[in-house]
Amino acid sequence: MILHRGEVLFRQGEMGDLYRLKNGLMKVVRVQPNGSSLLFNLLVPGELFPHHSLLSPQPYFATAIAVTNSEVEPVSIQSWYTSLEKDPLKYREVALALQHTLRIVQQRMNFVTAPSHERISLLREWLAQYFRDQPVEELLTQEEIGQLVGMSRETVNRQLKKYSE
Image (cartoon, rainbow, N blue to C red; front, side):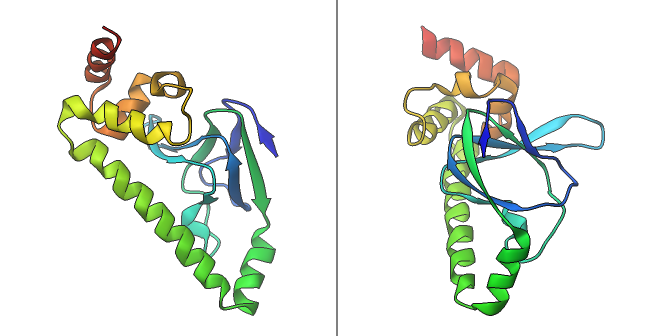
């Protein structure tokens, strides 16, 4: 299944399949009770998601949106959970997927714990592993960058201006 930039794969609160991101970049956005949105996660190629539903079906925690043209492979939840019941070794795949996700989260924790003048550079380096030709400001809004690195949009704007000088 091909999604174009800005297309929604699923919405917060819905129920549905799991997915594997074959290529592209997806963002996971959580809508807050006041209607504002928070960039909760970025999904990179190879990830099986939503992570919170790998062991049992749950409503989608957030909305998944294509940041770039992306190819996703649907994984039927019925066949996924049946395969878990029939083949206990399948839990190893779940454990490895969650371990991979944990490593990505740990890497991204550097974004918010590093000195503020280094945070955007760290995000750039991390994204360059997957998208060498697209700078972060072409992929995400300044608000979204700020949410990922723990800075206000205004501070992100100032930092980006320093990079361009």
